[in-house]
Length: 176
Image (cartoon, rainbow, N blue to C red; front, side):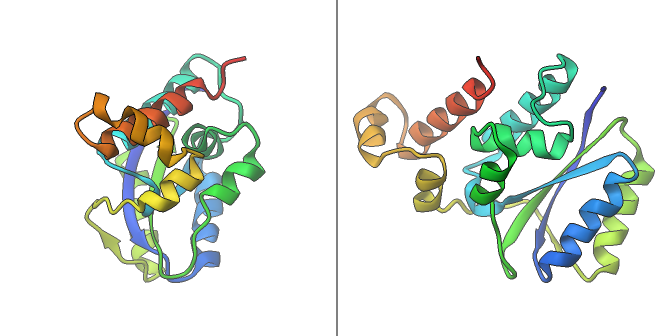
């Protein structure tokens, strides 16, 4: 399947069920939306890396999940089971999340339809802003603080060391 990254939205979760209804609605139109808590993303570089790896998985027929949004979450979490990945990226009402949107072709009408559907459901759309929760990130990606402390000297700062471990973990996820 040919796949493109259509867009990424940053939204506030007002109603978890209505957000999942939107995801299901667009899946029927061959648009897949991955929901990723904002506090799990260190910066734009790591988000872009995950998106690129997901696109390459489908381009090279190396995807582990049939749906691009689920494959994306497997890549993000470094897991091979969807159930495990979903537990790690859980969110609640009031949380801010990224909606990472994939489609078979870039289609401005689909982008506009998603935007309008979000607005019609009363979902507020924000500018993309990263607000990482380092404690949750270390726990989610199973990175011991001692490991970061031991390797931080190789990088500009602790966040850079954490980012490198996450990218490496994501890259190695599907290797057999």
